[in-house]
Length: 157
Image: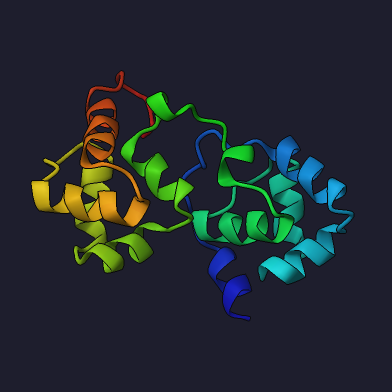
């Protein structure tokens, strides 16, 4: 019940760039039912259905499990060009939630959230750990942070 309980009743931000139709197309190409994909990705069939219909968006870790089952990349279902990605988008492409990433790089979830929103400075050591975790250069991480920090008002990161 672990994966199901995590999904139910939790408010999450919209997953920027998520393409519901691309997920459905990949599932159909693999000849999996909604229920089969849910079972294999450890999410409820209802969750898969709401993702595919655009009624909700998945958490990064749940989506990562689904794309792994489907044998596709995150880039196939999250459509954000590399030069337009915000810092939080890099985490999504890695298939990690904020708490998961924060634990991996040794900072609090709150600290990570404020950096991802561009509300606090990206420290060099944190940029290095993020780069290592994402398999990117420090410059890639700093560029994504700068895009986050300088995004237009009323734009969600």
